[in-house]
Length: 448
Image (cartoon, rainbow, N blue to C red; front, side, top):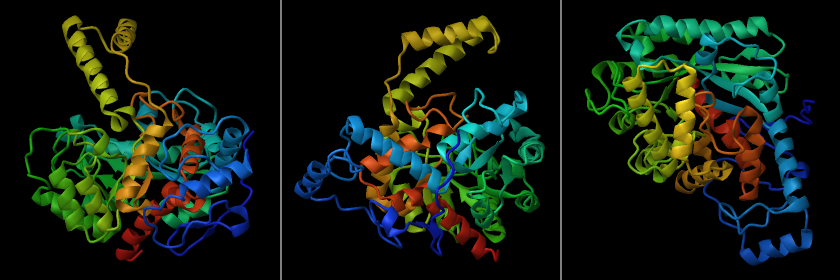
């Protein structure tokens, strides 16, 4: 049974959630928040001792990695997180379901094998999902614009086919109008600016179709900029055309997304943009040293200084270096085997070989705490107002932490954040308020 939302939080002028004093365990602070000061240990432990099995966590303060409280206290914390997920607006900036459904259509109104569908979203409290309009690098030689339009058509068809479950949302105001209605908001973000080809007017075309952000590149350098995955640094950052793209996106009111861009391209986009930029699905490079796909501390500070937000990726390879290296080793072995045997990827023998690789090269276990560790690090550096959620569900081949395997499990992340001492207001900011603030600023600067 889907739990109805007991109340809708008030909204401040900048889109943050504000909760009534009576309903909030931790009052938080209004306006811009900064890295929090832990509660004094003696006072905190005294409160825990006095309250026993209550909603307080018994760690040493915000960011404490100790195990969750056992028994009734842990159950109460989980229930509190579930209720919070149903009460606040949760927005995820990167879910890759459209490309999956293009090849294998399924009914999104019933529980299915993927990581996103309507029942799972309602269970997890997800209100708005940015659907990734993913353009693989192979389309950079032709067909990129056509593929993007087909995928947008597909997402729009979900609203027509299941009008009681889904609604296309094209602005922060439409996101909030859908909140609490029982319908999941579907926003659009193009992953790979190759869809623009070399025609700036296509930015206006996609803007009219409701695209809110464009990820400048993907796995290879394109006509806009260099890619973090591509050793060929064709442009030394942004191309001359890429600089025009950033300026035109600013003019139109589209968010610039630096996920996948090389360090030089990301830094130049941040500097060039007149409004804040986002990283729609990136995590912290501190936990994956040398892996350029995640953001360095320097880039995070630059992005935050200009008002932007980092939407943390939940994929295992984004969270832990040993996990990433093991995944890459498996992929290299699989690629070599496929080349040698000439067996198709969808052949049952390939699945058998995948399972053999899993047994031969086990990855370290990951839990929801790994995502919270990235959030803690970012918050300590730049403040809670520059962090959000960009899961990459349906886009990382199921390589996800235990407890965050699909959109039904956001409450597990909220529970971990509550246990570490984040207030409900701070969690609401990360869940949607920060991204909505940036989206409003970008649109406002363009006259929307």
